[in-house]
Image (cartoon, rainbow, N blue to C red):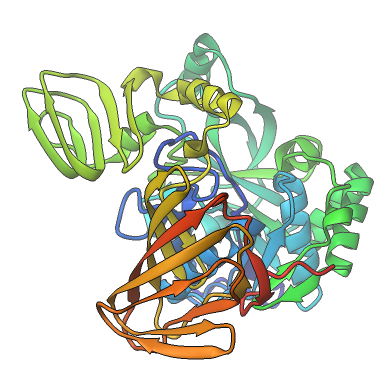
Length: 483
């Protein structure tokens, strides 16, 4: 296959990683959503998306649009995957896909006015990469001839959880590309069956190939206020370490609307390229079961799982052992702080559980016990009255902020590795089995000067142990609020 590059522009992947959905709760949570999880391989869905477009003969370096709260995890996962993005744009608030693609297009056209954007959600599975690349080739041909192209997935069953695209007549001189006759929102079961039977409806994949300048022109025609807000957010953006922070005030003015509603359903330039590429949006636990490798009894098991006389279950143990006997058609997910059991055909209704947790203000909806930070991670081991115990890991060469606490003292016990500890004006090196005490109000810092991860146990004691009792005086990662 020839390189995806012509005088009319290079393909620039735009990977959308702004979601914080919880349809795969309790594994996916607001601060660690499904695109950051290894659901179908050893790599996260975000890493798989980046690797899918890693061939620099075909694609430019990807541009990432990310939720601000996920920025350090996104950057680290891309580094591990061997991907250096052209930029990571940080959304201060979620504003759906039309503004996300707009800020990406505005960023890219500055240096590449003829660029084509390959817009991909970061949380989809595409099993057949060669079929994906072939579909991109067909879409690129249509895009270079002035089309805004969406990818349609062959509808194999009457799925009511997806939107549909109705194909129109074929585009002249472009094999495998068609006019769009219409977009259809998630249908009821009867209509979904008729769409599949017709043969001219595809599932809407949410993947697009767009000439950046053309998309901006259509957006200016259809949603001029949205585009103005995005342009101002980009113009007033600031550089923060390896990230570009969109201006919050301006970006908040952008309408919260999808690219389908804002542009694709109203433009006369929409085209669709049908494709069969092993696509799934992995939107529910049942969808994950459908694409997973199951045993002879139809069980998809991950982790330490013991199965006896059970069929057609999704069983996942991320903590401890899970044993099942005589059960069918269930989803059972075990994490270190949650056990979730549901009928597999009710997987779409996890949102009802999530809504109940949200109403109750439960922290299990937002975070895992294992919390990732740019310097490493920490796991809560125990939380009680005036006491909290954490297992902290600091990456080689990393350091926490120079900080103090108003309401708590801390005891640190080194388990493995080397720690450099700052306490007011003193600096000490600690090794395995050594410990130190940080009194309340003491200015302190923890660093790992070694070549292996530093592990320690932290015991906090005091009247208030919340994460917001941190006064940062100096920080490598730009987390000091600018007054």
